[in-house]
Length: 425
Ligand code: HEM
Image (cartoon, rainbow, N blue to C red):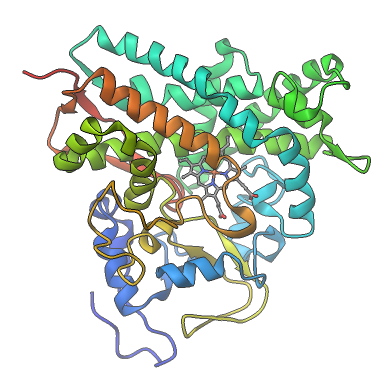
């Protein structure tokens, strides 16, 4: 993988075919390191033939995330992306929601949503998150081994988000299926049809849920204090402005998807990183007060959102000395930015006592993760309780045997299964 000298001096091109291999899914960091050095802003062609610009250095990614010339609104998306039906109003897309609009529409939506989805509501969930965690750990304790994804990392966030929204327990398995399909189905005609089917089922279900909740909402209770988030969102208003029915539906579907698979992989990737660094695992077990900082370091070291969401150039834009033409799809590689040695000393070292945070695992700027306080609560309670309950927990396979998946164009990255031995011996 060396620079291709036949290209114009303006565009530095490298062989990025390794981006799509199984080895890179398991460990993308060597390719990212090469890209940061050889072509930090790089035009990449996916195996399907789609052209994407990738940004790999911390400072460039951070700046790009606040650059108004890089839009989220899908009307600026290149034709190939629109023809896939992934953006716009098709069944495979979630419609217009926070991540697909720009200011001032984004500012309006985010203000309304924030009235119901408050930091207080998220923090108040801590005891409930603890109770769900304890129940899952109790069930696991009956055996000697477990798949940590199946038994713990997967059910915890879906249960939390369903309870937050007010989705009954008996429907939660459906959500698990729809959410996974929407995030991980292939970009083939079959995959797109599957994705659209799951999108339709979820939309139908959410519409029913809103219709059932609407007549029960008590307007005397402020949105942030409504018993569940759907009721809060129904009531959220400012200057008589409220969320429309389609905004409400899109928001709820976004929360389900954005809040689920990401948190699964915070727990999964976090535990893999700790298993691979027994000294750090031991330190965390001995000094549980390090937990909040450890979660931040695990997010930096191998966070769930590896490659960020698309942005679209509304005009020709120069980033890191590279011109990106108008109408391009651009992705900031958050996983690469957070391992940039220009930003972090010993960037490839996992150090749970690291004080220099500022990672980009939750994004940056106007679209900074709305659910970050909840994700942090879940990560801290899950990993803290797991280590307290099973002090001798260990990986039950060689790390090289773990199978990694990366949904879509690699937005979310994590292990498919995580076999663990719960006790010593
Ligand atoms: C946005 C990561 C958990 C809801 C984002 C973005 C990132 C991210 C990187 C910004 C994307 C961009 O700018 O392109 C994560 C990670 C999580 C997590 C790593 C877990 C460890 C959650 C949870 C929820 C949530 C639990 C809700 C329950 C959202 C929403 C947005 C968002 C609504 C869109 C915000 C906006 O556009 O204004 N998240 N997230 N996320 N996240 Fe999260």
